[in-house]
Length: 220
Image 1 (cartoon, rainbow, N blue to C red):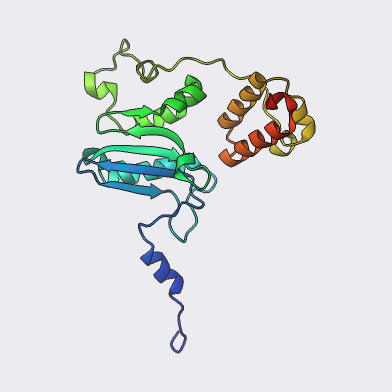
Image 2: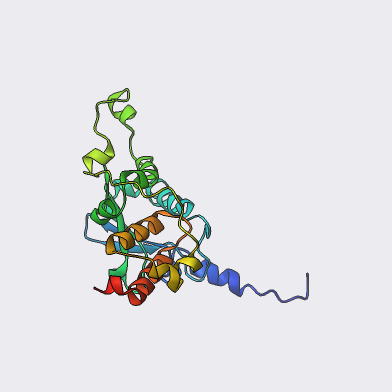
């Protein structure tokens, strides 16, 4: 209304921060390498704003990839895009997930070591969707064509037990941690936590630290 003074500071701040990111509070980081040697770093949390898709990080990843690969057309402009899960305060702590190239993509070696083929399948489908399908290449789908898993050398790991893990509070209790009898059992629990959408990376790391600190078996 006339005579009122409007506060446009938040609007102005959002406008000035457009296209800028911050590490704190981000779920993902990416590193874009161009052929001329230029490198650009991006994070999933816009500067001064909340990270989109707070409750669904899969949608967040897809939205960012659509912007980078389809809207901005980076697959035709870049040498590679390296994708990480943000962990801690330093980039050296981040967990490598995959790399994108103009004609293909690849899982990071640690992903192939830490997850089974079945656990990687949802992410594989997302990344495959940004590249030409076998039907487009061969005219018809070729059943004898090696799968992406075979090309990447993914070995099928034993599936975890079907019983679900308890909630985080129970798992952080000394009684639960004290029941862990070996490193093999501990590693299996951690692998299942990483595959369980209920647990964030920080929660998995907190459980690992507390378990090692309070279970003598894991200190040997």
